[in-house]
Length: 82
Length: 68
Image (cartoon, rainbow over all chains, first blue to last red; front, top):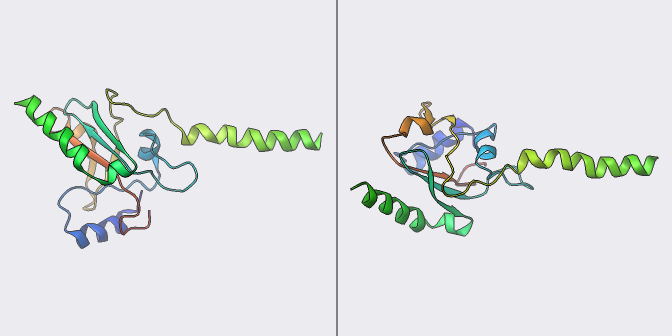
């Protein structure tokens, strides 16, 4: 939900090669149902979306901090594809 | 009457605002809502850009050395 400039600085700091998206209007956070009710930001949630646009895995809260669950889901999608 | 008005204000306003925050929770098997958001390079990224090409890991990750 950060503004583009904040994400630009963060991406440069960590040398991110992946897209870091900016959602200052919170429209995507609302559409994905992750907007925090009491505080003005999104909850930590990770979605793994298959090539067909369907959600195949969701990690929430502390599970979303550890990328293991999403990595496992990606491996499953990869093996399904082969 | 004032008490009634207060009750309507107390219950009615949050009741109207609540659905704005609580959209139906997405589940595994649901179609991912499309969006069009700028990345750090100013390019617009959409879920539909990847359809039929690549899987996506979409992480909402707050306060990662950034304000929000």
